[in-house]
Every structure is written in structure tokens, then in C-alpha cells.
Length: 126
Figure 1 (tube, helix red, strand yellow):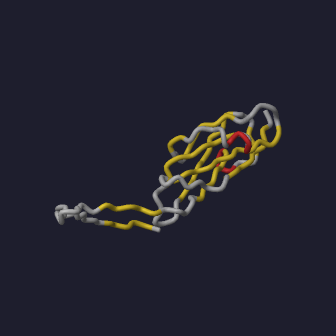
Figure 2 (cartoon, rainbow, N blue to C red):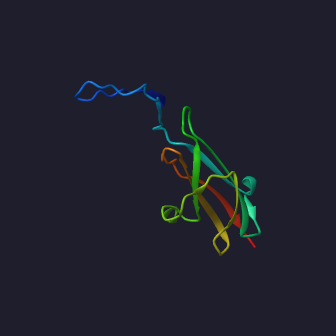
Figure 3 (cartoon, rainbow, N blue to C red):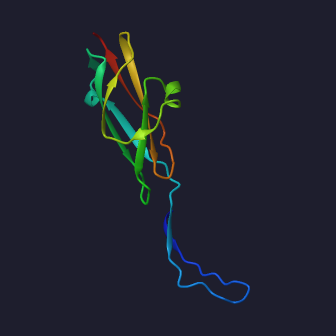
């Protein structure tokens, strides 16, 4: 894990050696981020299908940083959602019909590691 700097110098068959090498830094990140989602600040009920999601994600040090997220109203639908730039809030529309609604969120860091799915529920009563 973390940053590693490499330098190299090449020698050809006639014995000519390359000039001073330029260092290359590579960051190894194998740890997935963690994240949360909260509907309307953790409220238990709403009278509107239009809600605000509060989104939070962190990438363990020396991570590459959380860069993307995807959100869905069903767990099965999450995998077909497009990844979008990570943000800490998002306007969202719950599915129709009254009752308990669940929102699913997943986060991805710059290295492509995916978080576990985060969820929150709220009861919709118009």
C-alpha cells in the first residue's frame, strides 16, 4: 500500500547507457472505501417522494480517494446505474406508492475499489 518511486536506466547491446532516469511514482491502493447514505437527515418519515440524500465516504490511508458513487432505489438496480462524480448531497426521488422506501449507495475510489453497499430507509406517507 502507498506510494512507491521507481527509477531505471537502460543499457543497450553496444554498452550505451541511457541518461539520468526520471523517477516514476506508483501508488498501490487495494483497500475499498467505506460509505454511508442518509435520507432527509435520518428522518423516519416523509410526506414527499422528493428527498435529499446525505452521502459520506472515506478511503483508508494511503488510499487514492473516493471519486465516484452510484445510487438506486433497488439493490438489483444498483449494478446497472452509471458511476457519477462523488458528492456529499444529492436530490433524489423515491419510488411511487406509500410505505417503506430504501435507497442504496455504493462508492468507488480512484483505484477502482468498490465499497460495500450502504442503505437507508424512510417511510413514505403522502
